Image (tube, rainbow, N blue to C red):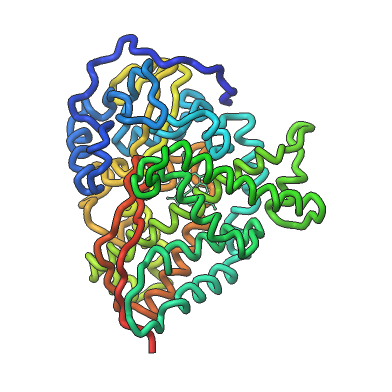
Length: 433
Ligand code: HEM
């Protein structure tokens, strides 16, 4: 069992030269995912580059002059190996690829950036809300919400909307807010702040402000909403997720408001942006591969389960997470030593030719489809994966029956090295009669 480790500084000891195939530059992350994958494919094609020593991320939010760099993991098998070995590769020393200030991480990461035993305690506390059984219980709620989302534009005679604002963001934000009982007047702020938390490298989100300013403001807003809800549940506890958290006892200790607030921030991002971006990339993919849309429509109920796995693989909205080694290990023929940072590139794993035939093809019948879009397994595997799948199923059921003749235009992409996202995208459709 992993224990919470003392901080081990990274060292340049016994490291090779930084790889000439660079995945740390700003220019690299400013490319489209198709362009980036050409570089990942070069790394994947040479066994000596499967795990490559890279220079520190360029223009980090809080640069560390002593940072020697990190190991880039691009093969599916290695991503799975690292994800599942939570004794060697821990999360408690940060999970983001970019270097962000410690106070921001405390405000926003909750148990995503913890190790056992605390990670398991906290995860168990909240996981009751995410079991397949629990998700089935709220299935009707999700279906109704999805119907209302599509009601919002299906008869719009203009036959055109901006997809993210009018469709993609609405269902996940609503489900997250329902889950925590966020009142209507705070919902827009919650959505905007959740987006700002992860937009630290996107010039549009920053405007003339620094990433720190934007992040801290976004986290502070979310903590303030959480605090209001926590106070209310302390007075009137119910049978909901937040009441459970407020009343929980971990080894004789109660969670502080701050800890619950950080969990609220984590979920506001993990649960909303990821699903929103997946739905945007999926309507785009269905525009480019109309045969796949037709194939799914022929037998929606029979085919949607496997199709959703392909939605996630193809979109790969979460691009990077990091671990830190606390024991010596061998990975892709390289010697990893305690203190080394190890970064997992999920889209590269999801387009790995050794696992996925014709990976650039959006193939809804792909089977098996062992993508790493929700992580490679192990202690941190996405807690909300069932909820995400359920939302995608409900949304695409509505879209493909009510406005099946649609076409997505060019997406305006989010510019960060964490979330592969769509800021806005035109969506034209034949209105429902
Ligand atoms: C398409 C949608 C989603 C994708 C692609 C996604 C992806 C991921 C990934 C890659 C991780 C990290 C896995 C690892 O480190 O091994 C993760 C963790 C997590 N996700 Fe998701 N996620 C999605 C939706 C959701 C939803 C809807 C929720 C909840 C409402 C959620 C809650 C979480 C939480 C709480 C964690 C941290 C788990 C832990 O550290 O134990 N996610 N997700």
